[in-house]
Image 1: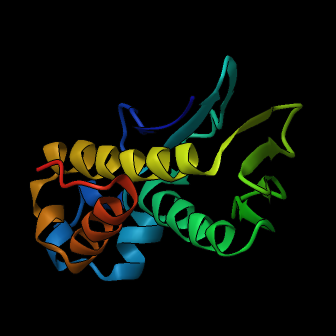
Image 2: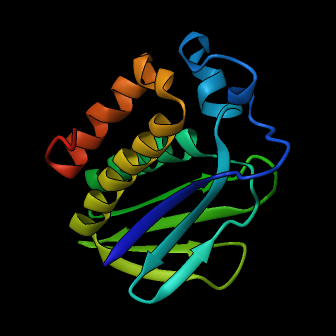
Length: 162
């Protein structure tokens, strides 16, 4: 069992641009890099990792996971990484056969799951992030980026959630 979670930054003085600008008029780059900072976590069969940084761009992380699945889904043995832009840290993904191993350079986190479970978890995460952000900032749902995320989530998860 694998699960990805995202949590929007909760501060008394919100720093994300989404608090000062309308999401529907933002550029793709702004939505991916400047809007919706927060934390991400990974739970794999009792092993737990969380960023605890408050500045991980959630939409970028979500789309990166979809891209990582694409890389891992092509061949039986492959590697992909997610790099955190504000540090040298990375999350590593390695596929060997049908097993995906996830590890973090930040600590000793390591977990394994089946590729099919990874695919489902990424699809659920895409839906969850979009639903959470959309509940707080409904204009995000009007953007081409939201449509792209929804399409990728449907492909990965296997069904439409809304």
